[in-house]
Amino acid sequence: MFRVLLRSSPLAADAEDLTAVVFLELWRRRDSARFVDRSLLPWLLVTAGNVARNATRSRRRYERFLAALPAPEDEPDFSTGVDEHLDGRAAHDALNAALARLSAVDHALITLTAIEGYSLDDAATAVGLTYGAAKTRLSRARRRLRDSHPHFSIAEAT
Image (cartoon, rainbow, N blue to C red):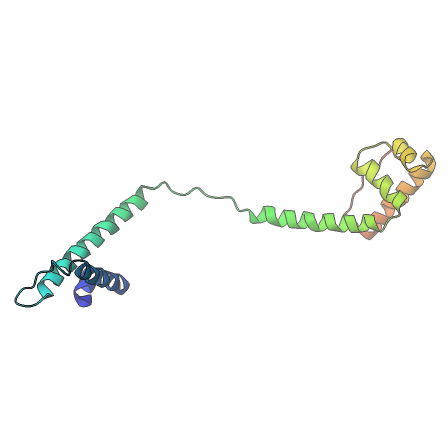
């Protein structure tokens, strides 16, 4: 059976599968299988031909179905976004580490002016400093951040 089905199937694995289907059909129809001169070979050959034709039709339908599908759209390469996100995350972690090394007052001044957008006068009042003392401390804190990480850019607040 395998050699017969190998002629109708381009792949040996397909012929093996079809052989299994032929013998499954024999098992399913064991009560009605017809013997010819005390042999099942003619019944098996007819069944093998039917199974091979069914498999060929099925393969053609599947190929037509695939051909009818619309072409897949090009997907954008998301690796650039991932790289930028990871680089941004590393910079974010470095900034947090640098801010953590500042004193609590200097950290509060940087956070209030550069991140929260408060004026220096409002930030000075919030941390309990005069405007002049807050301006000096903020300038020194910015310089320390810039010296430790030159790529940081903390905007000047007035």
